[in-house]
Length: 328
Image 1: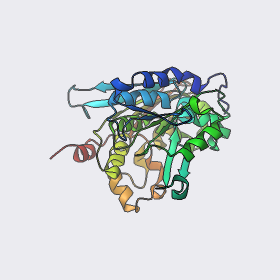
Image 2 (image 1 turned 180 degrees about the vertical axis):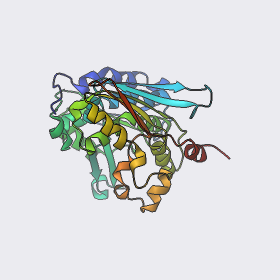
Image 3 (image 1 turned 90 degrees about the vertical axis):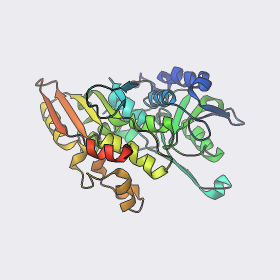
Image 4 (image 1 turned 120 degrees about the vertical axis):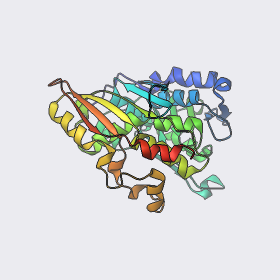
């Protein structure tokens, strides 16, 4: 497919990035500047962060093309009290062209002068560097003189990684902002759960559906409290989507709507049915040994513009979530 080159995800998210900087004190994030002027926003390493910070960073991640909000659900028998809701009218660009965590950024301990570093970069700056084959498939490259990147990691990036990002994006140091959101943090939990629609689109792409079919996308997932344990924190955010995430897609054709309703839900995966942290441990903490079909929302509705019909697939796993998140 070819996405519109007239939309710059970095330009569209620029005002949101500035708000994150200007409201740092209110959002409980800390600003760190490198000698060159790059701003590193600490949203959970040393800073406390906040839900509001996580929502804003999630919107930045979507290149300014997504609506992200927190909803409180104290209605009759809710799945969970707090939810993150997401919507995108340009879902392929917002989710795959910007939000998807697909840029591998690493450094050896020799390069850092200490511990080795690894993070998957997400957010609009990915579309400046275009280091992933996905951008060739999308037919999209952003051109802007400012960029923002999000890293889900528990320490601030070393200068060698910052320099790589600057070089690959073609940015002046003062024109780059990196937000760091550890999984164990409040903001990190929010921005991962806010990927509920992105996960659906990534699996849509993985099962071979033409992305031109996708017209609109929205979804929500419960927002668990973060865990101080890294594996448990990862487990909670993944469980929120895999067992509690709901997505509604609008597509062009009936055939695609039926296919997605049948194949998209996480229940199609070999490893479905156990808490994610338990699955992760069972594969000796090797993320890539887990059945990729698991990474999908629990429940989907897919509406066809061709026929006007809506197809449903998947189910929620309330008991599994309750057992993992609620104190006994």
